[in-house]
Amino acid sequence: MEKDGDIIKNDDDIRRAIGGLDSDITIEKISRSSSNCFKKFCVQLSEERMVDITINKWSPNLFGKSTVRKPIKQSTGKSVGVIKGVPLFIKESDLIHDLEQGGFGKTTISRITKARKPTRSVKVNFSSPELLQKAIADRVRSSNLTFVVEEYNQTSIVRCYKCHQYKHVASSCPNDKACFNCGGAYHGEECTETPHCVNCKGQHRPSSPYSPIYIKLYNAIQTRVTSSIPAEVTGIAL
Image 1 (cartoon, rainbow, N blue to C red):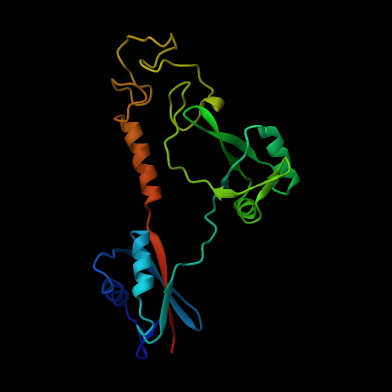
Image 2: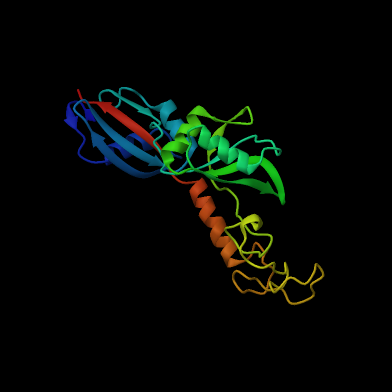
């Protein structure tokens, strides 16, 4: 990127230009690349709305001649997706068969539950990120129906209602059923023992939101959900 014929010597010029558009904009990181015709700067902003502010207020006359836009989305490397709107009458085995017949290879799936009840969303583990992207682009078919596929992004904490441990669900739990209150072997719904958490060993129920394990998982999810948003500033070398 050039300004008045002079190549930018450091990132401070970019920081001043973007920071001057709005005082609320926070820049997390700047990286750069170039080709024969363009010099590109990828600017990590802390919030999605800041990207929109930058795009709306950017002047093409900055740095001689330049544009700013959101970068083209690249493959994330993830291979887990969600099939939306799958009726409850469609069996998992039938869906797996139809996905393989549709050219999506071997998959493992599990229907997402909410409040212990099955939903119309099915989580799918594809064998590669490319097959996930193909499913997103082409959609998938099963039982003569067509379904939208989205990339899976965990936004809630998964806890098993059988053993009360985290990161798996009851349908795939390898453990014995545990008491919801004391964490010991299941002995009915009227436990009067002192509460005990099977996860952090604290004196509270496993479902407590005050458990250090719960707090750690919650913070990890919030970090992923609110991660920095990129904007790409492209200047034509004059």
